[in-house]
Length: 555
Image (cartoon, rainbow, N blue to C red; front, side, top):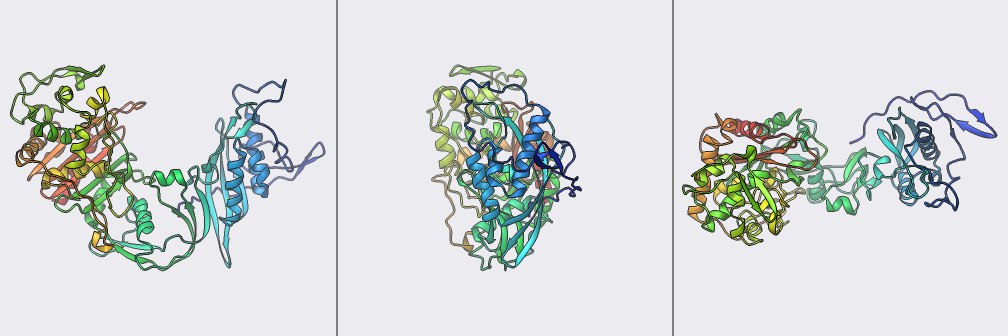
């Protein structure tokens, strides 16, 4: 249900007296000082700017300031002194609203907060409480943390307020609610009719949440009573689903059948296991059916909702455009210099290689950046955007998969960013679902919107592309991807895949990362797959083995 077991509550010490004010120890290792009852609201009317003539506090926080501020906040919260707890934060209004809802809307009572050992300005703590709704109640335990900062204006130490302080599953603007579930539970089935569970397939936790949100009412179930996260405006904009944290009483689940293949889903889970930043998707190219989806980190569905620069895997889309515009042809000579400058930026190839008198196929197979960048002067700013939308069905924000997805973004850009977009950098953003669809479009010859739940279940319309590639363009693109899988940068990963196969590797530089994100997209027979390993380095070495193993398994 999303909560974690809290540390065992430690025995409280006997109350002591400081001056004339009664004080009580807030239990927990690392807190040797006392938190004063009654002190919670003493600073409620303090302004965020320093009083006239008063020196503004500055410099690093002392251990005493961190400890006393955390104690003040936790003691007031535990007592139910919402105003006092809010006053101990740097955003009293937001804190008061969420903490009030904690008791009123979430129906959480009998709260015990146990601080842990501070680490600098961060103080972990565990929560032990009870959630009660009418005649039903259940214990609630989880861990959280707070950070102490200096308040803007006067430098006073305060809890840096974010909704995650109250519960780590909360984003700012979200809230907690206990009551009848917003959506009835859903029993999701694989394509063979067997139930899919997060216990068996850990990657499917977010997918099952999304299915419940979309199909809970339509699937014929009845809601139970639960404590859940209700997403706010920002979370909804990021397509985050409401999340159940604690089920007080079970509802009656409805049933929804998915396209997932149990053997391939298990294989996908195995491939990303232990790789926290790896994600992969496998499709049936001729239909768009999603056969497997897996993420090494289970808290966010990067495979469906990630928004990452796809690096050189985007050259599949770019190559199709250049061929259609007669700016390149598979077996004709094509420039691949060490460097090419455009729009004030100087672009280069990996390790500054060049291919003298090489063909476009050779540049594609070796992933020559300048072979694509060199064509920027011949292009209009919106050419790549049009190609992505009209042929590959991307960047239109209209896919109806059955759960929330990010459908790729190829914005219109100019000058150097436009040139960078040709090699999957600049403003281009994709995820494994998008790039698996790109490979599927090449393999099948036309775009088929990926889907997890058949449109026949609810009569929804799938997205379409307005046109297909010419037969000549398609044949050349398949030829180049096949050559890349056999003799190019994808050859090592694709060794042993066999059959009618094609692939493209990619690596995408990301500011602040020591290693680029590694990408790989490929097809074999009627299957298409793509994967990414964030900070994985070259795609041939990181994402490539994951994708290739799935294709081998499927074969």
